Image (cartoon, rainbow, N blue to C red; front, side, top):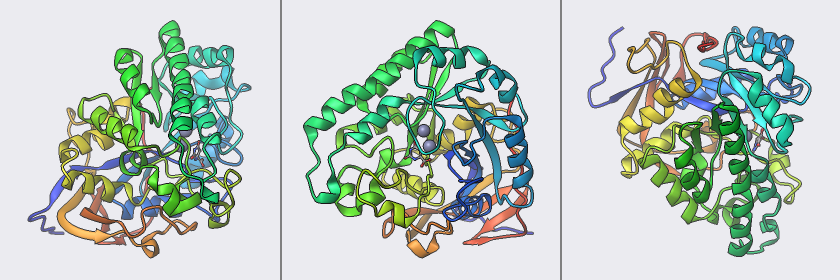
Length: 396
Ligand code: DOR
Ligand code: ZN
Ligand code: ZN
């Protein structure tokens, strides 16, 4: 088939290395099928799925279930995180080498799900257990969320509380970096969201890589008044100072990957008064349009975007074959039209939860085609063929 790409840009197949597709457990808000279809429509070629499902993905049996389950259901390629728990530490070395495992996710703080490894002793055991990079979600980020003033009752966002909590948040990252140096095991620090951490981590490049989320590059605390519970995520959206720091870190090379942390929750749960509602925002379908809009606004280049969403994830997670820029492409492309301007509409969202915190936002730059392993899988808002997504392979 002949495809006319006149005036378009061809990027390597983009990867969202941080999504929660909720299977098994919560098909009313998302499934493998709907989440990967959303990914494809949004211009992604692959996603890496988090383990805090119900039940969580913490042993080979559940991992095998998931690998089997995505067959004939996934519309784009998919990699799997395995969760660390206090009970599975001895098995982590073997688990992380299972085919299609992108890494071990360590929740060092409360989150959606029941995965928790919060004390230094167990954290160190986790870090010593395997060989590959662990992915770290800090405890103190969560405390910060829990202390946020109750915006649903109209209280203004308090800068003083925010400042103190940012200090607290910083402790989690410092603690992890001390353990990383001690054990010699690098960590990919997920959703780094404060200026302080980003500055600090520059001195730890030997033992860390850094993820920043789309939301922390896009939204500030004004969103709380506008969106209420639909702005609540963990770590939280912060003020302009942190957003500026995140962009500075993208520019100076501190950031290795950008993900969406797509974390669907029901409308009912998002409409509950804070802090009883679900924490997490959808983003799998909107991350590429929004990042392209940032390109149009001059905040980063298209090649830096390809780096953050393809070469970066490939390098950090050790993807075999996909998007290894030096090794050449493997037939995965995202084709974008930088001249197209389009508004994100809620009725475009295919996740069953049915909402986006970016409804009404206009984006200049839009993904128009995704090619996976040489086959056109999405073109102009249409998914083509059948769900032929395959598990991503990672280096052992
Ligand atoms: O906002 C969040 N949502 N943060 C997390 O830690 C988990 C995620 C989810 O799974 O809902
Ligand atoms: Zn996390
Ligand atoms: Zn997450």
